[in-house]
Amino acid sequence: MEWSPRGGGTAALAALGVVLGGAAVLLDPLGRVLVGAAAVLLLALAARDRLLRPRLAAGPAGVAVRRLTGTTELPWARLQVRVRDTRRLGVRSRLLELDTAAGTDDGGRPRPEARREPRWPRPEARPELARGERDGVLPEEDGVLVLLGRRDLGADPDEVARALRALRPW
Image (cartoon, rainbow, N blue to C red; front, side):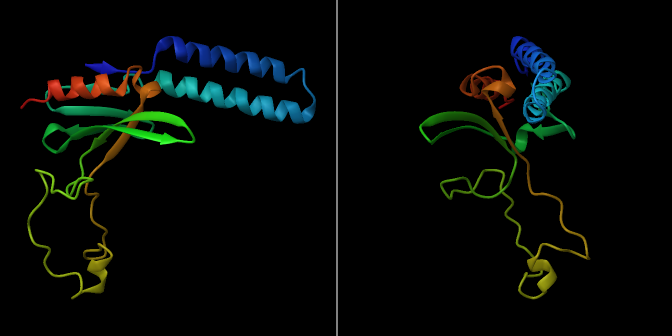
C-alpha cells in the first residue's frame, strides 16, 4: 500500500504560488519581497509533494519513507507504529509515528526488540565511550523516528496506522 499527499492539494499549492508570483510584480518593493517569498515557499512545497510520491509505502520487508535525502527503509521487526495526538494553543494535531529505536517506550517498559547485551567496557572506564565514541568513530544511530501528518499521508493517520498494523507479517 502507498500513501501520498493529495494531488488536488498539490495542484492548489502550485496554482496559488503562481498567482502570488504574478501578483508580486504589481506590488511595491517590500511587497514584492514578502509576496514573492510566499510564492517561492508554496511552489517549493508543491514541488516537494510531487517529488516525494509515494511518501510512505508498505511492503513485505517493511515500510519505505521517501525524504528529500533519499528513501529510508524501516524493517517490520523493529518498527513501532503509533499515532500521536497533541493539543497546542487549542489546535489538535495527529501524527503517525514510525519508530525503530531500541529501548523503552513512553511508559518505561522495554520494547520487545530492545537489545539486552551488556555494554562493555563500561563507559565510566573510558571517557570517550561515555560520548558514544568507539575507536574515534561515533556509533551508528540506534533507530529512526519518522513523523508524518495528514497532509504528508493524504489520509487520516489513524487509518494509516490501522492499515500498517494489518499489513505487518505477524
